[in-house]
Amino acid sequence: MTERFEIEVAGARLVLLRGDITEQEVDAIVNSANPALTPGGGVSGAIHRAGGQELTRACAAVRRERGPLSPGEAVLTPAGNLRARWVVHTVGPIWRGGRHGEAELLARAYRASLELALAHGARSVAFPSISTGVYGYPVEKAAPVALGAIRRFLEENPGGLTEVRLVLFSAADFAAYRATWEKLARG
Ligand code: AR6
Image 1 (cartoon, helix red, strand yellow):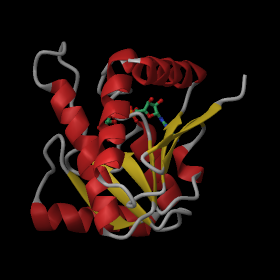
Image 2: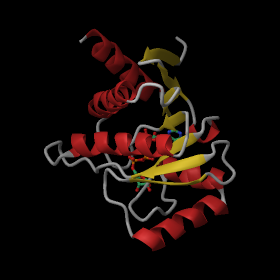
Image 3: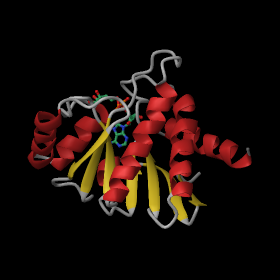
């Protein structure tokens, strides 16, 4: 089975693919950051390693200027050595059982990232699966929130972005997002 899946939403491409977000050639990649915007581990550590000092310094400057980010917020920096032009840093919710507004905060993180990228003139944006690693959000619960938020944004902003990619790191995550999309598309 090919690990790439593409559908059209309101004239834009929504692409699910298995891969590494640091290698994406898009205008903006999204980082699942911590509130302090320090490199951390997981996808954030990988993005900072690939982006280099320039990226990490830009994050430190944002942190000094505006203080820590809250879950659901996003900021944008240049991308340093990455192929992308910008990195949008957003903070997802930590999973605490599902009754602490996690879904709303997760949807807000996707939406805020898309709004910020579009406002800076980006046409293509790539996301990792926000919150489903260290932050513990179950992937089968995160996938409908992520895909629903992206779909809604594309429907509400026609003629804006041309492509949104969700870059899944593991085969299991790719399968979960793909199955969720089939369900959303049917319902
Ligand atoms: N490309 C795409 N996805 C990746 C990559 C990569 N190179 N590396 C990991 N993933 P996580 P969170 C996937 O833990 O749960 C950080 O320390 C990974 O398999 O990176 O949002 C921050 O500083 C998983 O599916 O982020 C925060 O403190 C997904 O990315 C905290 O972790 C997210 O996993 C954020 O936690």
